[in-house]
Image 1 (tube, rainbow, N blue to C red):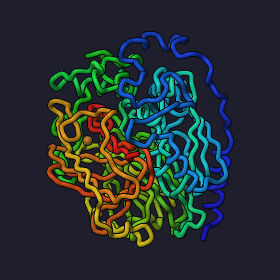
Image 2 (cartoon, protein in one colour; image 1 turned 90 degrees about the vertical axis):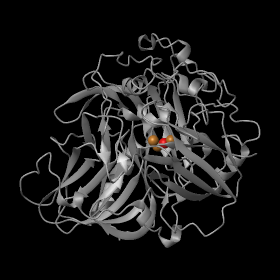
Image 3 (spheres, protein in one colour; image 1 turned 135 degrees about the horizontal axis):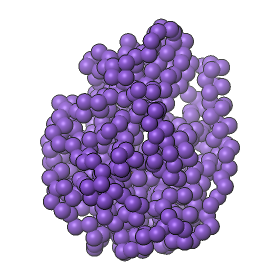
Image 4 (cartoon, rainbow, N blue to C red; image 1 turned 120 degrees about the vertical axis):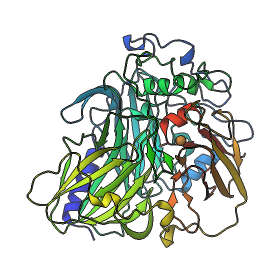
Length: 553
Ligand code: C2O
Ligand code: CU
């Protein structure tokens, strides 16, 4: 059942997504504009040094990708898998990544965003659609777009140096792929720590046979914010985290390829604050029992809901008794959020796009990259939707208003935050999306290693090397075994697939692994290509906690 309210909402969003054709800006050779000054040094090498990257310096035509012995991201198997999705009507979207000024609500910051809004304009499409997103890069750095959580064709996955070439400054790239699962997703660059700027937006894939009944829908995107505050940038934060802890080698040396080199501290050409120019953002001793110890590495000055400070929150209006579907997305860089809606219970219906057996809870914990959909029945009054930066003693706020009354205080902490909290591991997949029982054909063991002291985050003690492959074969049931030997929690993320948590657990693409624990997740190798596995703490990923699963040729 769909109410007029919801239809109106969807119609408007679809109309918006279908318009706004791009004024493409694909002319202009990189290096010719003023903003490119200083970028042409060794750290900006885009060349494929490991035989994994596409044709350097071009966009739109990735050329031959891949590694001998492995399926190529743009090979015939990938095209066949895409054809099997039966790509439907095309939905065009134009995105411009640009430097801009963002108003967080009484405080403006210079940052990078999609257009001039934060989060970027939501992309909404329908299951079966083909989306055709033209990304125009008006940034002073190469960029990319990754479609977090989607099982899409590999050459559209947006990982420079692995599945495509960088989208260089002044160039554009069309991401074109079929949507094969409904649900709550999001997108962000896969280039350095750009995701920790304002470069993120929700992607909602509607189910034409939506089984849930609700009156309204509220997309709620959480984010930790540092960019443009007192001279800070994510690049400077990355540099500080690395520098402050023993001095890594950032020369972008052997095995790093052009992909990582340009992102590493000290080599960025975008005017990251030099050493000492901005306040320290390093966080020591943030503790959270829920996260099993150390909560995070970065002290963010702000925490935002839908791009707004708690002192100027977004207000969502509804009628008492309305059923509201809230789609929660954690787009943060280094912050888990504990979320509650004052005066309400939450009925969890989905996580990471996939349905679960409905479960009620008072609070939820979202690691970076995770999503939860919940249903609430609105009470009568004004209610805080609070996101507690777990272990960091700070909150973000949005407001649900169905009646009169004063707005909640910016720092309000509804009692539900300390109430019952259902974790992903306690949920069950909805019967229709349960992974059928099967003995794994292969187990890929990934030990999470390293620490803040040396900023040597890695899998199996080995810093990210884009040329490394953990082999899998099409048709296999694969078990990924994450053993966390570090003193910190990590939200681990697999591209291109959704895995199942143990014991008929939910289908997810991102899962929290607590320190000292092992999490084994299973997936079917049904989407050929080269796929990243990484920690979704963007600073852990950039310092090395990433690797690649490769389908064997
Ligand atoms: Cu949102 Cu590779 O991740
Ligand atoms: Cu991590």
